Image (cartoon, rainbow, N blue to C red):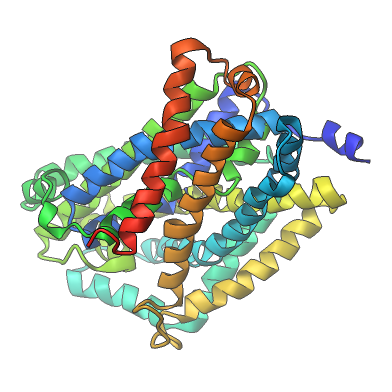
Length: 453
Ligand code: TRP
């Protein structure tokens, strides 16, 4: 039975498809919604700098490792890690990476779907013309109305989850490649357009200073933790999503080159999003520390004041929704491919099962903006707690284990073969993945616990 399943392990139709799908997974709410809001909360420039350092030093070698493990195993992350452990002759307990990934994906999707719901509801608001000529107060009111209404939130959370389940049920290729191929270039064009519009506004230079002139006085242990966590989150790294996508990657495609493309695209879109949001913040005397509502309280303001703003707003929120959508499906893919390859559960049923479970957990995130807003732990509501636990703890921990397995457990001949690297090029991956990245994660964890004062 398993042999038959292996033959059924799908493959992308073209080499570009892996890059498109992985970039589709990477580019999402993390870039457009989360990056600006955590940058705002963590003081701007210094955060950006630390984040870029985390991307380069920690996330890049781990991303290459995760794709490599996936393609070598040609299987879902749980069975795949079992297989790779056997190949390397090490403890099968490394499967834990796969199990943790399935759990993390489930936890992330539960709140991701709620925020995707916000984006969807903003498509409706844009189409209603709610932003045209709106002032800061009106725009803020629109967002507050949305999150204070449990019924509306749950409705859009449900729509988002249904959209996700439908695509996952249809399989890897159905629509995903097309969605990404159209969305990504269009998103970049619109963001560039909005940055262009911003250049003329009063807050532009303040915004550039805020983003690119580091002020280290605001940096704490938590800043490093959030920046590191976000480097993982934005690249969909550390939970097996990129491993599964890598497992569908044809042999003979360069893992390193593909990985670098994904990182460049993802980072460009995040920085562009920041350059769109912060000029609006400073031109209108708003606070960068608005938290999760930041983009929803700023974008409509600029769009509402522009000629063509009515149409641009619709297109932009449609694009944000699509970006969220192509990311959401990758959060379920490890679980669904596992259920199919291990137990032969059809995609339709596993997608529905995972969808229902995730939706249920997501209800608590939706309600943590209204009915259960006062239930707090470590000064965070349920939504904030989920975000913190997944992005800042589980993903870096998963990534660290991936890097350690790929370098210290796998045979070097195997990793070299799979990466298509030898000599200096191989060592340029190995050393950062084996030593620098795991040490970086460990340091940031210890620092986050306040160990360095
Ligand atoms: N990277 C996506 C974003 O930035 C979110 C995401 C999709 C993700 N799949 C993931 C995050 C897997 C972590 C792990 O919006």
